[in-house]
Image (cartoon, rainbow, N blue to C red; front, side, top):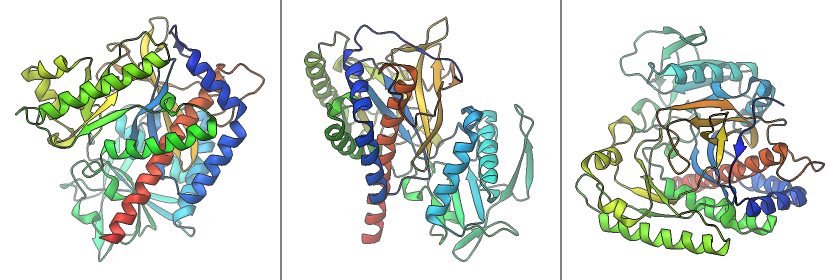
Length: 434
């Protein structure tokens, strides 16, 4: 056993227990189904998924195609990360020897830089030449950054372009790996390059919408429900969206109010079906973007109508100073998992490279409750207590034993990964048709 196991504190775990039992009984069929899906649709290079375990429901609430946080993974699973990177690179460039890593520009975030250093090390250990090409506008010369936490050194070099290829002074890579979510748009130097760029630039947060992703996820969950013999709602957060909204000017407010009302009614109906006594709620958040910005918990339409100026300002801002112009209204999924003797609120975040679950951590927040966004000040990270990195169940143990619950996490995370794969495939088809 590695790490520490969280506590699950809820009085209604019967639906989840039935779900976990079904996963054990049908694990061979489920794994065969996943294999068939990866033959049809290639997985993203990497991905992280935020999960919420309500005891009666286990569902993803966010899917990130440009994940940071690799420094928070358990180093015991490094070999699995290395093998998965080899598989991912070989899929797109079988003869690849070199890989260019393009990170975010915020070099003052010491935790993010540790993530870049960890990712760099993993790629190197996978047997590839790797360099870091920066798109920081005022970076003119190679620069060394000494990391405050680990003492490691990052060597940043200004990205260059010749024709339709990006490179460094003496380094011409086969593959460009983005660890930059492109919230501010595609940098001109990367636009239209002929090399394989992973993940595709069209899926950056300048263009990607969460409502599109969860539309694909809904289809995946329905397909999976038939294979696993479950109600897909147990793994699928209901959602609606408003495409045009301005929180500061109160434009689109009626769209938001009506969709909140309709979604709350849908959730109440499911709660009644499963005899769930908890209070339904929804999460309103920016339809594009990350970093936990522009997120609020809503329990009634009055919460929307009575938003004060401070709340509207909070909801109107996104990463890179972008304005929020669309919102997704998502079923609120409780997290009844807590960490440590203080019982701080926690949620699992699962990481995948290629089609493999390679680790994860618990996002723990001592300042937030079980209905709130945990990706906010006060959070910390604890490595997930995976015994086998969620890769297979243990039929000799109870359905809710830790290895089997971890396996359930891995399954739901892979459902989100498959939705992202379909999202990427659809984006590429649209690009070809344009």
